[in-house]
Image 1 (cartoon, helix red, strand yellow):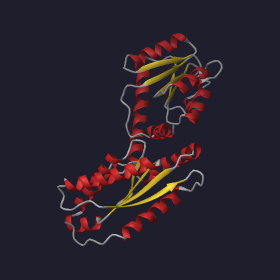
Image 2 (spheres, helix red, strand yellow; image 1 turned 30 degrees about the vertical axis):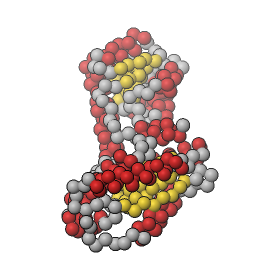
Image 3 (cartoon, one colour; image 1 turned 180 degrees about the vertical axis):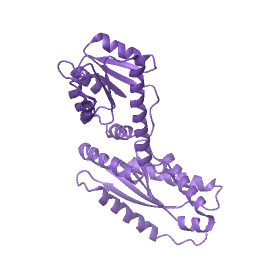
Image 4 (cartoon, one colour; image 1 turned 90 degrees about the vertical axis):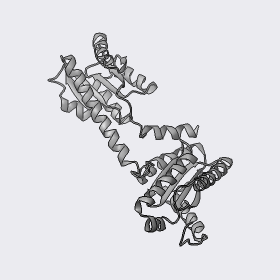
Length: 310
């Protein structure tokens, strides 16, 4: 289903960071070593599965989502360096720690060049092993946090312009493949300048936050809701005629409900433009945005200017 595929794209870039307990795949051709490393990590609360070589590991990773991989380097069928290179191609955000007893043949530089995040030589102490694993995961979490910050609008918590383009590019590909139409709403908050001028920029910021809450209340988890900047927002969702009409009606109702119960000295008002993405006649993201933007301004021009708000 297209909805499941779209949710998968958002999950891959989800802003929800994982807890400190991880699901780890241990890869080593020696059973005793596999079990030893798995025991060390299990004692720290991690869930561990094992694989006997690189091919076995790839098979397990294709069926189960892991947070990290710890792999020996010298193994039959598919060695750890080859496995790490393959993982860096297929699962770029999956941290890998390499382990080897052949330090003269395989250096940390070789492992890191192949895509590993951490490297440890055998024999190692229990403390060194867990310390290096914990260090790798702390650094990975820090990178995830920075990614979330870079893709999130700081004021509203919605996706920002950059993330909108990243996700929408994937949505359009899925729509073309599944022959499903998408609908883009371009939403502009009316009279934001008036609110800023008469009530201050803090109140203007609060108005933007209130509108973002209404949008999150109205639309679904599989929909893309983003603030493009200033007073402009966009929503992209799968377009079935009855669903589209229902969602637009719900947006109007939620906006009216907010205004009826408002504690602010002004009502919220928006202008909305609509553009449809037809998979039979695909257009670029920029073209889709331009169509929705033009539609929005057509609606806005029909509204009388309010020099005072009730």
